[in-house]
Length: 163
Ligand code: ADP
Image (cartoon, rainbow, N blue to C red; front, side, top):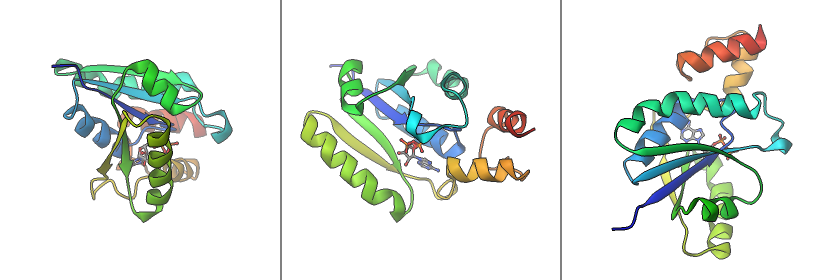
């Protein structure tokens, strides 16, 4: 049987427990999981690319016991990156209705660009539903406690950023 490769793309600025939950669940749906860290210059990320990659690398380490995982930075059109990786599916997390319209449009456009690649949506777990990287950064910047939203390693990096 051919290997089923899934790509989970995102900015991960920073990686949250919501992202981690999607990675864990996606890893059960494929033989190989690639986490694509978007360079996303226009989003003006707080964390440089190497740190965003390092945060993901850190959490996927235990997955390596049961699945092939790679963390890869990427730039440019997502569908080109998916093709380059040899992935057959794109995984995205869906939170409340606010994510829907954008994700629906993006999945539709990607399907037009390459109908052989399927976008798979995983509903956010209710306990992580409200976690958004943007708000985590805002809370950390204002000196709030982010322990329930991110891993201890990410929390430390946020503290260093806003020290
Ligand atoms: P992007 O810039 O591609 O939206 P993000 O890092 O913000 O990158 O998000 C990557 C993916 O993870 C998106 O599909 C997003 O909907 C999903 N996601 C973000 N936060 C959560 C969460 N708390 N629970 C589930 N999915 C999430």
